[in-house]
Image (cartoon, rainbow, N blue to C red; front, side, top):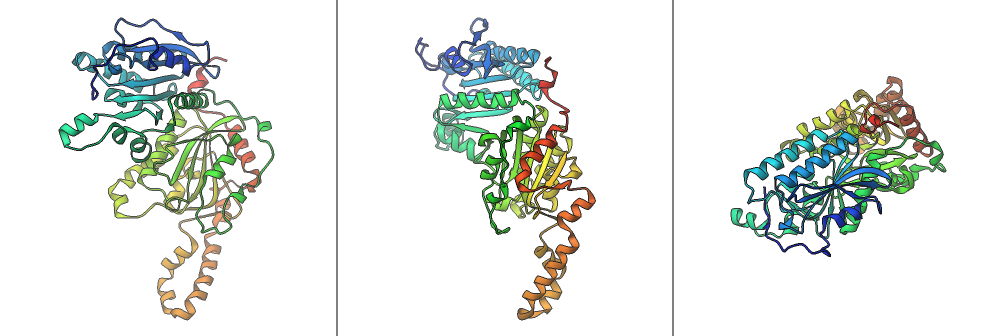
Length: 473
C-alpha cells in the first residue's frame, strides 16, 4: 500500500510539515495538548478545541520518511479514534504520508488493517474528518476514504493508491502527481474529495468549519430566521427554462453559508451542509442547469452516501426537488443506474432523522419517489403553488397516450388538439391538488414562507438518531 519513495531528509524545527505545528494551527489557539506517543511512531495525536468544541486530532509526521506509516504510527491513529469514540468527540486526521512502511513488511500492513477497522467501527458513532495536506498514498489514501468528509488542499494535497512511478512501470502511462491524484482527479472525475481548499491554511479552516457543523448541530431557533423573502424570484418565469439552484440554496440556509460537497462531480445534484434557523441541516437538491436536474447513476451514488452520513450523525435533511425523472440511455443502464438508484431509495427509506421535502417546480416519475417522497417516510412534503407532481409532464404524457389521435389530426389540427389534450391531462392527473388529497403532499406553501415552514417541521420532529444525543448535558 505504499507508493512514494519513503527516503526523506531529517526534520528541522522550522519545517512547515511539522505535525505539532500543523495540529496547533488546526485547533483553537492555546487549546492543543499533545499526547505522549509510542517510540518511533509516525503520527502525533492531540486533543483540543475547534470553535470551542472538544475534539481529538492526529497528524502524520511528513518530516521523517515522507510520513510513511508503520505499526506504531497506525496504532497512534487507532488510539486517537478509540479515544474520540470513548469521549463521543469528533476526530480529525491531517494526512501527508507515503503509505505503509516498506521496510516493516507485514507488521505495517497489519497495523494499517487495524487502523481501517477502527475507522469502520467509529463510522456513524462520531464524525470523522480528513484533511489532505500533502501526498497521501496507499494506506494513507484508503484511510481518509473511510471517513465522513475528505478536504483536499489543491496546493499540495494528492490522493492515490499507487504513485506515478508505479503507474509508469506497470502500465506505461505517463502522469504526474497532480494529474493522478490532485483536484481535477478527485474533485471532478472521481468524487473522492468532498471539499477543495486553495491552500493548507484554507484546508485547515474548512476542516474546522465542517467539524463544527457536524459536531454542534444545535437546535432550531425561529428568531434567527430574519425577514421573509420570496424565494420564487430566484427561479425563471418560464417553467421550462433551466436554472442554477445554487442561489436558491444560498438563500435557504442562514447567511448564505453553504458548504457544498463534491461541487464539480455529478453536478446535476447538489449536496452540502449549512444551518437553518441555527440548526445544522444537510441539503440535497436537483440542479436543473445540469442535465435538466435528472437523476442518474452518479448523482444517485453521490446523494445516497450523503444522506446516510447525515442520518448516521443526526443531521436533519432538507430535500429541494425539481426533477423531470431519471436520465435515460444505454450508458446509464450499463453504469448501474438501477443498482445505484436503489441505494438512494434505501438511504432515504431507512433514514430516521427529520427530513423535509420541498417541491419547487416538478417531481416526475421514479425520481419523484427517490427524492424523499412521502412514501419513503418523509417528515413533511411541501410544494410551491405552481409545482407539479405526476408520472411525467402533461405534454409528454399526452404524446404517449394519444399518439394515434395526434397523428390523425394532421399538421394543421395537431397544435390545437395538443393544447386541449394537455389541459385535460393536467386536470385529470391533478398535480399538487391530487397530491394533497392523497396525503403525499402535506401543504402548499408560499415561497416567502418556505424557510419558516421547513424550520417549523424540523423543530416539531425530535431527533431519532445522533451521536451527540449520547453526550450528557
